[in-house]
Image (cartoon, rainbow, N blue to C red):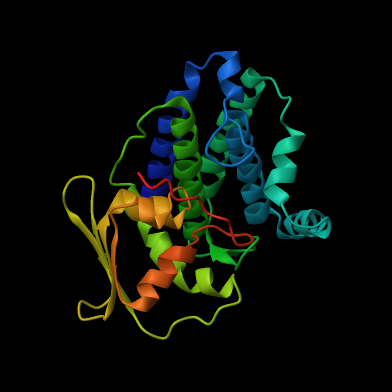
Length: 262
């Protein structure tokens, strides 16, 4: 089984985890506030559906995508906030159908693409494999926001490995995105998987290191939890600074979440 096939299967499974939460929502539940400032449950889902469509455009029609990107960025910052406002009055049934149909098309269309082909995006160009990983990360992160709004526990799975890997790979981006120099020293990342196993990156003798639960690392690098509200342990100044600015998604530097002290 190819790496792309595995990734698409995991993206489909992550999609089902989100759909399970949405399937039984009452109409008023779609307007419940989520931890993302100013975003309701409905906004999390319209964001996913919209950028599924944009990801397919980027993969299948580069020229049209670049034109769309130029139009979006020409208006100024806060692109995600501006876009969710466009769909805020959408009927929940239609919104859920949009998410389901866009995701189904993406899973089908991406399966036919060369895994290492490069596509443009809002950050650096990336491969089809990376694009699918990014959609999985976005689904998981926004799914967490929905779960938090509904008071539900979001299921943990081995799929966290993909998100954690993206978090590690975007260390340099997290610094350059804020106009900071990328550290020239390695960072060891050692995480406890949901099944008790281990995910690890970097040399074992690195002076800088991050360790702890994989779910906490994923929540921090997707800016769903402040590092001080996690069980992550850091050693070394580079590891500490990285977790304070970590951002595994493209776009302007995110504000992150305020520590709760709990």
